[in-house]
Image 1 (cartoon, rainbow, N blue to C red):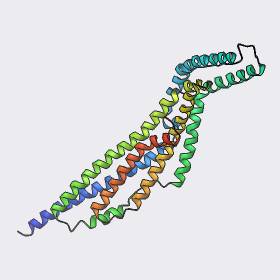
Image 2 (image 1 turned 180 degrees about the horizontal axis):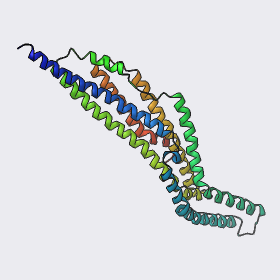
Image 3 (image 1 turned 90 degrees about the vertical axis):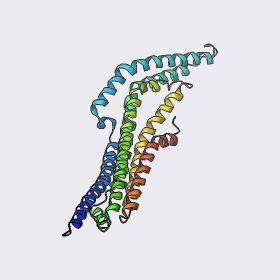
Length: 287
């Protein structure tokens, strides 16, 4: 039949090989592009990430939260004054220095409440500096070169149509799975920024409780939570660095082993990034 069947088989093989190569390139590029974008977003401060949202949160803090915090700090200072009077035998054992300390304590408490939002932002400025320092050490590029993909494709040219169909199906499933993991990674980073904005918007309220011994635990735990959110950024960068190193150690030889290994590393990356917030809180004993 003048080799017509051979030509048809060659046509379908070229079609399948093209699909497999497209899957491989998309598979590696999707997760690599997302890794690079995450590394950039993690290193941004709340103001740098989205200036409009930052302005909105600051206006909420100034117009809504600070008046409420003012009421709370007034109640806290009144309780402190009553406790001080009661401890001194209803003013019979009066010590002028105690009132002096109370005035200093009151001034510090009011100053903290009025500058609580700036303090919260300062925490993330420090976190940004820490993340940027880590970025200088961690190589976040996990790119697999085009030559490696071409070399992998060369090993498939001798395979039959049936096996190529199975490989195309396998790479398509892995490609979809990696795309889903890249979405999860994006949601973790964006979710952290949302949490930072929401957490910072009410900063004046927990700071208002720090003037009282019993209520002060609220403010202390809030500060731990702030530093945990900042530390989470460093943990995200460490996860990205580990992933990049692992991907670069993959030997691009057998397509089944290579693609499944990449998928495994991507799943581990997604899981560890999901746990990064919990790890940061456990390190700082925040709850």
